[in-house]
Image (cartoon, rainbow, N blue to C red; front, top):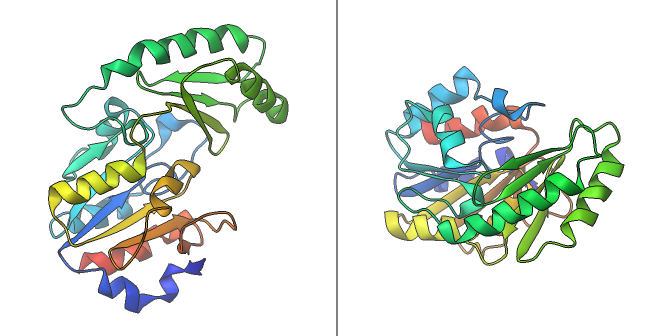
Length: 242
């Protein structure tokens, strides 16, 4: 992986008005916090993004439910906000997944009842099991894995002190990004994300039209470029600001 801020030539190449800019939210546009409900963009990040949306098509693809993320993006001229790891887009309710996810939720509430600090977030079309506040995080993660082993039809993706449970056949972030790219008829795409669910984007064939940037170095990531930390997001946005 190469630090993207060391490649101003590449960023300037992708800074044209015909580039789609796509972002994850938590850990990307906003710093990671212990309580997700308290996550928000820094004022300077919001200001830069608001200016960028006047020139570029910008979208957010997040693991959060759309109903959860939309209040955090008010006042920004985003062309699309896609939730639930890529499967929840505006005007489309993937209701075929709700009964399955409800069953997972009921099973996990019972199976993880004895794990203090574990919280199950039901996003209607997917679940996120949080264990950041667990008294013994390794034990909690093991218990989550054991509980999930009996559930059918899921894709399990670990993140930062979370385990995401997504319908196995549902659209992922990579598919959602390609679909948005086609709908908006943009020439190139820049995608910035920080977590395991973003690897579905980073695994896409890059060619000369998709630039994947990971927030934080990882020797297992398929992203070719990275930011050293979320603090560098404002510096990255500056390339698309003018």
